[in-house]
Amino acid sequence: MTPDRPMFAAADRNKDAILDVLRRILPESGIVLEIASGGGQHAVHFAREMPNLGWLPSDTDAELVGYLEGLAAQSGQANLLSPLHLDMLDAAWSGNVTHEGLTAVINANMIHISPWQTCLNLLSGAAELLPAGGLVSLYGPFVVDGTYSSDGNREFDISLRAQNPDWGLRELNTVCEVAEAAGFGHVETFEMPVNNLTVVFRRNGTN
Amino acid sequence: MSEFPVNPPPTSFIEWSDEQRNENLRDTLAASPDPDQLWVFGAGSIIWDPRFDPVETRAARLPTHKRAFSFWTIRSRGSFERPGLGLALEPGGECVGVAFRVPDEGREDILDALWRREMAGGVYVPTWIEAETDQGPVPTLGFVANRAHRNYAGLAPLEEAARIIAHARGTRGTCHEYVALLVEALDLHDLHDPETRELHARILVHLEDVDDA
Image (cartoon, each protein chain N blue to C red):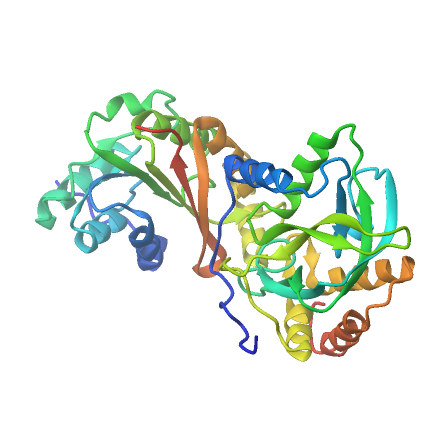
């Protein structure tokens, strides 16, 4: 039985703004791994709009992975790949990715709605999987230099921490430091609608 | 240059890598006309916050460059929604400021910190400029606007600059606070810059229209 379409309203609202950034940064070919694909709106949309790239969705929720599997089959998009069950709380998650030609790891709206460890693991795992020049893109609300960019972000942070003390908006500088320690350099941070950012890192080194 | 802005306020920010920044520092030092004496020319926040103990401090005048708020700041003194204007040196005119002589001891750390502060995003071209002082000319390191940078805004008419600065706020505070600190610092060193004073006066008028100034 195919589960009903899960609701991730934000993913519908922000998908075109994120697509604009991805068009600017992604190479012509390769496979893009999405972490925490949720309802798959991004993967389906990006696969349709950027058909030269392979799009590999994933989620930690087994039910959602089943839903994404059905979505990929129904879409008729050959470049929308069969989803993976990946848990960012598992430091060894990258061992479950065996695809060749990975060029980027993208994520939207996860690192503030999950323990900080998921951000650390996402970056360390991406560093293992990506070649030099490979990209990581993180979308969401951030605290920048200890400052909220809007009252809305401040209230959102407070409500997240009240729900779970391990959640909360992350400091951009800290995320950049962690990325650098994992072997990435900061490339660019983009303004996104409603006070969100997309921060892009590039894997250091030469192939 | 009549056109303003040369570039619209940027919608993303780029940071230089450690390698880029270190290479720029090395190249700048290699071009020094007199490696035995290293002076930094303070035109803006360096005047009131040099972040090192100078061996010597002198009032100084650049006969070749002027003070101008000519690049977009979208992080420290402005944001994407409320971009501000940052201070740089521009060719032409003159600039009164303060020259600080950097000590030999700890010089490497001082310069590393200075480059992290001023050159994080490469909006300047660090340039050796001869400054006049009461004790004679000294070669100073000045931070000249990088016109090739996409944050480069160009020379705004004073009134336009005042309006932008009055509305801008970033992670370090408001943009107009920076200008107020500059005016204060210039007064403290008995330096006379009528244009900066005029800019400040015009900002104060605009601030009456700003809700959360």
